[in-house]
Image 1: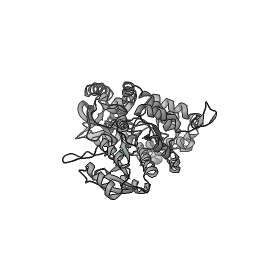
Image 2: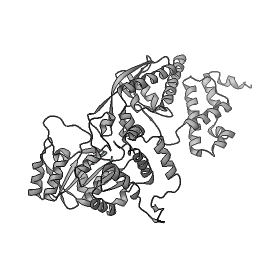
Image 3: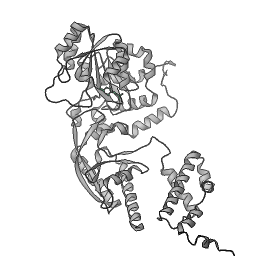
Length: 485
Ligand SMILES: *Cc1c(COP(=O)(O)O)cnc(C)c1O
């Protein structure tokens, strides 16, 4: 007796039928538009997207949220959409809604579109990275930024390497190897990512002479280190990522420089993060200003390119010409040299600094730091409106928050800001936060009590559309789940 096909599954639920109907990966891949897509995207990416798509359908069938399969042509279209929206790359854009401007995990300083375009122009083709076009002969990658950095900091000489940890190492290895280096016990810090000052000193060949105590170090402590322990280098390290309050004292840079002059000791300063102009212009009342450090007479000062400067990852060294020249000639400098992408980015950012008002507007991280609470509130209200329109079933409000500069740059400085606060009567804030991270452009927010907070200070206006779309998708998913129950 011959049974009609469907009755074979008489005792099975409808999903067994659907599962059997689910096309094979190869069959979908053979679709004409997906074949054509192979010219645009890597085959493995397309195949993975098809597999994921079919897997989602399969799971939908199993948990009975799908009772009908789309036509093959519709599947093809959905997969094409996913290919365009999806993340081909591991390293990709996210939306920073944490309110932490220099977020160590989110790439520190955002560069902005114009700097990005300059990088594309320089690095998309050939460049004069190490070619002196006017002279028609070999040039130096270190030449491109020196004049500009000297102009902006008042230093005699300047150079740029891969990052500031590298700059500290090169500074010590070149100028303090085999010498005794006096440093305050309060400045033997760990910066993060296992960058510990004592270890860097040891690796560089400098000999550590600890002076003072954790909370108090006086000039006389350094004096004794020079007079009694043979220290000939005085190193100061900015305690970037913590604040010490209460019964504390430190020897200020000008005093150290004075002592350095009297005793013919070198004075080196790892400023970590520093501004190129007075931060009061941004409404901020703490932080080092590079020009001051140079004026104070430190022999070499080094700092990061992607902290308060707001540009690419780099270690910048400024100071006396004879010392910078020696660092440049150190064979180890080759290992920590800066690449052309970062150099292009730095030059583009530094151009703005010729006019501090312009930099405050054009360097994204500075613009974010200088946003007033009032401006944040205004933006938060606009974004809240967009989220409400996209997802009317969620509870959306505006809340005052405390944002941070971050990046271990200005510890203890709080920036009064505003966030959009979202609650759902259906799912937890944790679940919402997790959902936002699954978006094509992940949205990184934070949770406070039962709400999800999206701080607007670090959100670009171009991000607002993506955020609204994310909440529309969230609401859509919640209604589908409600319908399925
Ligand atoms: C951040 C920091 C460093 C490390 O700089 P990177 O650019 O991250 O390598 C070194 N010293 C101090 C004082 C810092 O704040």
